[in-house]
Image 1 (cartoon, rainbow, N blue to C red):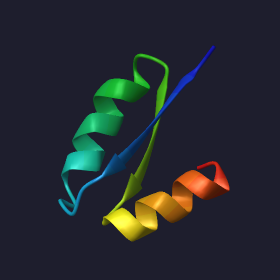
Image 2: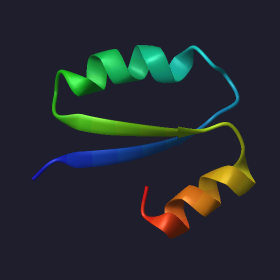
Image 3: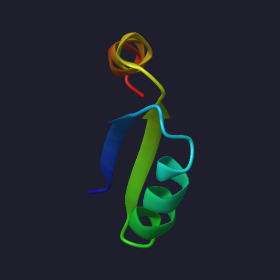
Amino acid sequence: MASRVLLIDDDARLPELLQSYMGQNGVTLAHAPDGPKGLAMLEQGA
């Protein structure tokens, strides 16, 4: 079973770094720059 992570953070470079590491380990990373957008993505099943 693949893992998915929703990262809510306003740092633009952090998701790139995490995705490069996590992707090698079978984890899919979605990124939202703030709380409201993160909650919207969570509701949509991102």
